[in-house]
Length: 152
Image (cartoon, rainbow, N blue to C red; front, side, top):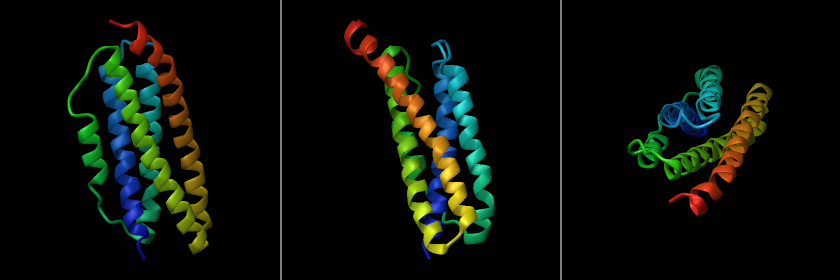
C-alpha cells in the first residue's frame, strides 16, 4: 500500500504552507489584512499537521522532500513591493493547490479502505484548504490591477 507516500506528501506540504504563510505575513505585514489573515491561515495548516498524526501512526508515512523543494524555489528570498506581494500570494496559491490535490487523492484512498475517520478528516481539512485558496484568489484579484497596470 502506498498511502504512506501521500500522507508524507500532504504532511510536508501542509508544514511548508505553515511556514510560507508566516513568511508572507512577516514580509508584507504592512499591507491591509495580510499579517492577520496569513497568520490565521497558517494556524489552520498547523492544525492539519496535528490532525494527521493518528493516521500517520495507523498507516505509516514516507518522508517526502518534494514540497520543501517547491517552497524553496518559490520563496528563495524575501521580496518587497506590490509586485512581490502579488508573486508571494501567487506562490501561496500554488502550494495550497498541491495540498488540495493531496487531500483529493487521500480521500479516494480512504473511501477504498472504507476508513470513515480518514474520509471525514480529508473532507474537513480540504474544506479549510478551499477557504485558504478562495482568500488567496480574492486577494490576488484585488492586488493584480493596481500592481500590473497602475504601479510604476
